[in-house]
Image: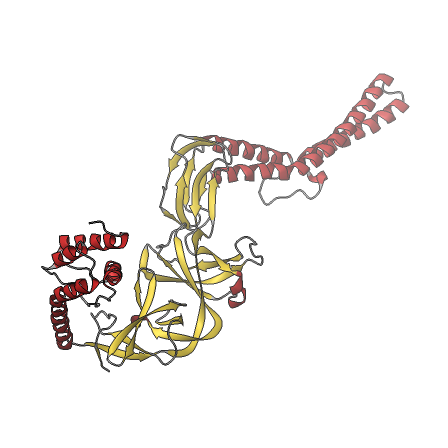
Length: 468
């Protein structure tokens, strides 16, 4: 016998039912079966609450291929389904009895309230060192010793690297000798001595004495020459001698003046050599930790060669991006609470120190910076942080206890109390940073929510008993 397309579709369902020994009466499959049954018989198939296994499914297969007497088909099929009705009624009755005897969940009833909520500014960011410096050598020479390594804590002025001092000491001795020689020429024996008058210099005094002697001889020679007691040649020699003495005196005065002017340079050269000798010990510029070591013993250093990278660890900087809509909510000096994944049970506090005056036109955010106390050194530069800044903005909002909220697969839900039964309702939440959670939509003020007791799980449709 040829079946119409609709009969073929129903026949397919019956074949599937025969294979599984039950007729589908639930879900999309059951709905499709009922529609095809109604087309064939012009009678609706009763909706049963459960699936029941039957042994008479073959009756349906038989009548689908028989003469199309719809009334007869309807009567036989409905007769065959009496067993299903009895089965469904029996199972439904058992479920009702079970529900009646199941113990009720004990819950606390909490009303949905509208209260004042102080808004928090929440953001994420990263930690940065307060200071990070590449310490370089100020002298040239070979590395004698490396005193610290990566991760070591250092104090301000603590030695990091020792550079060879042999050449530096020789240079210092040379500069000291030149300085003392210049002082000796000026007649200065003590370090505190100072030459106030050029004429007091030993070299000038000697030249002045020679000039005075030459002048006396010259005067005597003039008298003797006038009396013709000496030849003219001797007088000329005396005159040349006094001229030479005068020139020597002038030269001595000029030399002492120049030497006195150069004396600070000699002293500065000594001080510079002393500084280079001190700089052969490369020291930490501030308290912190060694982030990187880039030298080894025996390495030859030139001036400005980096040897270590030092980072300051307390406090640390935290930088955050804040939406422009919250620009009026915060100000410098506000407290900030920070959490990191490395220490999920700890909260670190600090103060907002800087607020960038400009907004990024691409992200519509502005950057803020806070200083975060890190006395124990638990935090490290580069950590990802979640930050919360309590603001001065206060709003009226619905709030529910945190324990009344359920979260599953990205959806927040609460259980409303309706008589002695729970009704699960999806809600949209706002601020999640406190014990009282803001609810934006899904419930209204005055609704009674169920809060489970310890160890209980609330379910939609569960019967409850409210306890204090």
